[in-house]
Image (cartoon, rainbow, N blue to C red; front, side, top):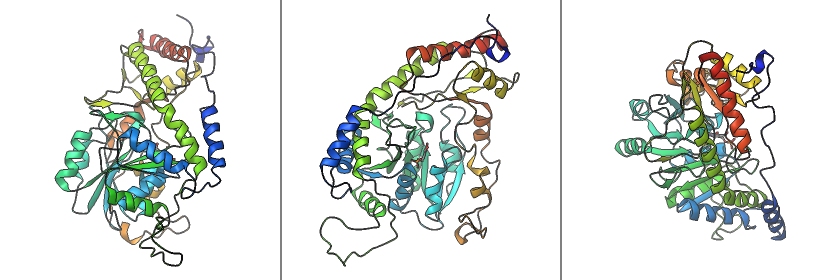
Length: 413
Ligand SMILES: Cc1ncc(COP(=O)(O)O)c(C=O)c1O
């Protein structure tokens, strides 16, 4: 057995992960087309509308609205399903900050349900979410974390039973499916980020999906200062019916998004092939719990969040050994481990320069320990990002790195 790299031995992965640009000729061609259209605003150019129509067709939904980010998409979704001041929105404490921002920006109260560790999807636990429903609950915001799909049968049923909107945060699960349907089209609205790390990327960007024409109408208004753009309103006559923001992308973003949409099926397939090999290569590794997939789910893997469930060595010692082997593994599922411990939530802080708790939030009491599965997931996860650019050799060396470290510590890998 070769010596661990952390002890001075050779690396299992001596070369860097393959990292070519995720943009290419098709993006350049469509960008040129956008310029040649002579107008770049979404109202006058073509590419944003073309992207939205392509999403509608390929994802199988009636409406798609492009936005400037995933956070913007989630904020807009909150408004479009009717979330208002003092309403409660149940979500996960293990998401991106962007998962929570839109709730608070709408002056609604984020309520954090735990994740499901038994099913090992590490997504919102339906039972935990249902137990938190009150008469103030307006929506449940579920994150298909890491590209694995949450239990949508259970969550949609809870939504129906309690008259609560289900919003799917599909930022990490572009093109994933549940019972054959693309995620984001099953709940009341789907929200997607297209920041640089996502399956489809425009550097920054996002979009919304819905089958409900009224929600689509409100979402469009919310994303564009509530301006009515169908020509029915003359200059000087915009009614400005409520507070809308400027979350409009331009047609350069639309052009890149169109090209990325074409790349999506191949990317999902490549991610799936990489992950399949990880299951084969690491399925027998002791103390390593691999993510599980629910019946009906077709994940669009974005990460491979395995958990180390042993005691000794510690997870962090293992991570150090794996990293020394050259593997890109980390110890967190999300930029902040648990939303309940972020300063914004702990202090119920809306503004950067005043610590006065806003009125709508005054009576909320958060227990930082109320999502123990989130803490357990973050304490034990061996996070590995999946990327279609990885070569077969990258995949093999990654598996070899795990096996080498596991063999060293546990005698088997
Ligand atoms: C699950 C999830 N939700 C929301 C967001 C926010 O997206 P954006 O960065 O485009 O605002 C992200 C981004 O990383 C995300 O991963």
